Length: 240
Length: 96
Image 1 (cartoon, rainbow over the protein chains, first blue to last red):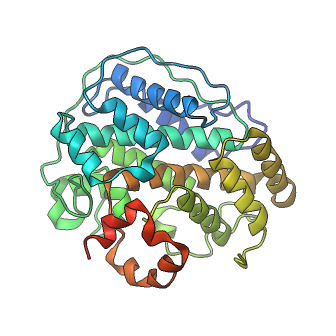
Image 2 (cartoon, one colour):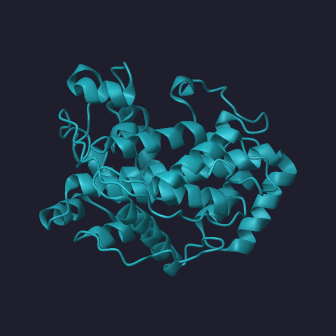
């Protein structure tokens, strides 16, 4: 997958191609609460949901294999994919009270949103969607961070700093502060890490967050970057 | 809206087209960005849109609150822009 985008007419940064390649590979590898076949299916179902709702995916191929998923998973995949702006706390509580684990909820959110990120990038540049590889063997790790707690989200998160203990250090490094968005999926550290890696490569690295002169291309300033970010967030009705 | 950002018009049109589903409009706006700002800028604009298509959904789906230090800083324009009316606003404003 390191050769992702090698046939593009755009000279895409190698770090961007690498993180997108790693993202695509992660969809077909065992996760924390789902095995590889289930993770691959979740991504394929998200793509199908978007395609059926009129969200264009260039070169769309239906890769759904009819793998069984837990109760509520389909509804969550559909909502995060197509109507995330309508999700509220009651929606989350209803799914969890009907048997979907909070950890599974978080892993699904991570998989769907990371897939949407890669798909959006491809479509934006006129590139066909990246196809999913075959699912790999292996079992979910079922790693549960023992310091996760309800704090600034409906789902438990690992707090930064001493309250977060070893799981916080492993995920965030030695820091007392982490932006809420980057701890949002920390109940499943693998998904939180995947989101952080994409965020730092597609947007701005942690060390440059307050650097308002930051740019990766001399013709695309930080102000222009924030303008595009704000417009997309407004279209997604995202308060955060 | 005057954003005082250079090439704001074509960047906003490109972002709108990325969000929408009209491939012809997307191609037209991408070409505008490409011809006026270059290939690198087009890639960075696409990467930014991709990033926030992800982060916005994460935020909406798990109900995160904005950082306390940002609540006051954004108060003046949240109401004006209608941001306080988003469903996801309740995650922050409902906890004040």
